[in-house]
Image (cartoon, rainbow, N blue to C red):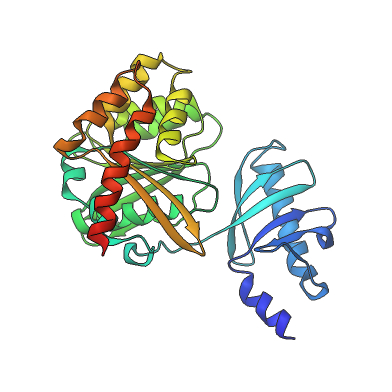
Length: 318
């Protein structure tokens, strides 16, 4: 009975590796845990929702889509049929102060200078490190603090942010479907022309997104996005590698040097985020900006600046 009660509470936060044809062979995470007999009805209903979404939204392809089942939202990643990876999505954005990120880093993410200058804020880390949570919480907190207009472009809407935040902050969310480039450009054209707006883009995975975001960040908008990577340097190297499919390396690095404002790398250890940040807002970061912009210079040279800034952040956290 205790196990059943525990799982009943656990359902709202668990992830699944779901076998939609034989749900008893599915796995629940954190774990892996087997599906108990008393939970088969829940799992079967979830499998039917996944099969319907796979047919109607993903059109039978390995394309990420979202579903709602038993009042819970999931992000679904098809694998080799009949297996699907499900991640639980949460409707409420977490308050910045509850993220577990030390205050000196939060102060930079919420700085007025980012509003004044705009540019690109890149949050990276491994799967499950809380990247989307950080950028979503940052966007909502900035809307409440400064007001303004924000647009989100996501393949699956992970947090419900549509509507007003405070008296002066408005967010509109767009779920990108099949015609990726046109939908993205059309949504960007909807930005108010005389306002410094914010854009949250779910994750940079291809050259179209990389190129469009670098150019949008140069227009004075504040662009928040995520990417997988094992370090700050690795994130920048991957971003340039993706962007250079659409432009040459020199242009990619020049655009990045002009637009980049912050890089945040985070991992989770025992549910606590461990954060490293490269802050390019201050005058002491000119050398780092020059390193990024010079395509003949190796990005590993940024590590000294990262280490120096990290020491200062840690000291101010004490």
